[in-house]
Amino acid sequence: MAGETLLIGCTGVLSVATRGPAGPGEVIVKIRGGSETYLAWSPTPLPKGATVPVRGMKVVKVGRTTNKTTGTVRDVHFRFALDYDDLGKSVGFLDQVFCTRYSKPGDSGSLVLSQANKKADLPRSS
Image (cartoon, rainbow, N blue to C red):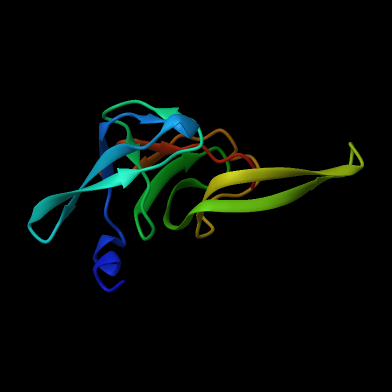
């Protein structure tokens, strides 16, 4: 839909907590000089007031290796498999936030913030 492209790069804040598989919450997105409310689904419950990522949202983090860097959210339901050589198998990850490259090995665990300094996500693997 053409209207959905207006949401790209916006930050959403939950006005009604999500309930995981039990049902959606509501997210308020500032858009077009005002705000609009949308249904928000999540695989696990999220509390009211949580900042939720939206495609195109700018994020910032300070990591041990790369110091302060910025990235852009590309997907909010990204799925991938990561090979663990020491385990001899792959581990699957579901519903991850995928960003442009802004971290390197050693940055895992860095706090990721929206440009409004709200917690957004944690890097799990570089």
